[in-house]
Length: 231
Image (cartoon, rainbow, N blue to C red; front, side, top):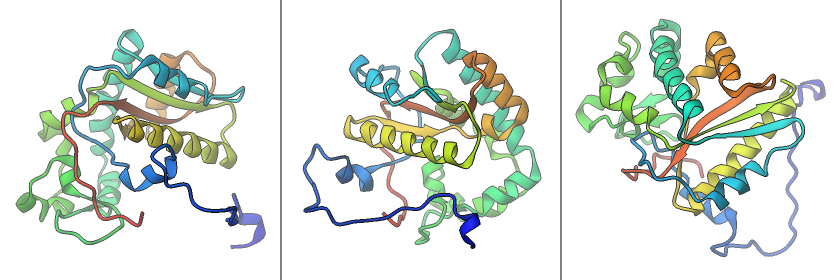
């Protein structure tokens, strides 16, 4: 790619010894787990939620929906849009390239066990997914995906590459802080892949900002295994 195609540049420089203490977020990078299972109703401490809110700025919002009307509306939106998105054959075909069997050694994509699929059925899931909306067949999976005491949305005033990168930086920081505190996160991408879903989420949040990232946060009822990963 040419210099004109460059969106972000990362430079590493040695500044001293790596801080591997238990208080360093760096040490929690390999411990991160996306938890797609059911969450408990327990709320994170208000101090933790306040630290997340403080990550916002004038041109970027971190909206936290705790139990109440907004939280319930986001749950309904997720439950409505996710099956709708998976009804699209083109989306299922693309997704099937990322879903692997439980015995995969691939560091690209995700093993089916992260979605609660046992070993033997996992051998067929990548193929079946191309033809069948598995979301409609799994009431347990739907209930798990919508179970959360907290939904968090990161929204930006503008909608440029820089805003996407900043959104990712904020989510990764929240993810590491959550891991350090014994909490789990689970990105909920479906409403943001759907034009109507994105607009509805804007309405729920009562904002003119662009919703960039939606995820649930909470304490897990199950601690899932790590899939193969690069880090």
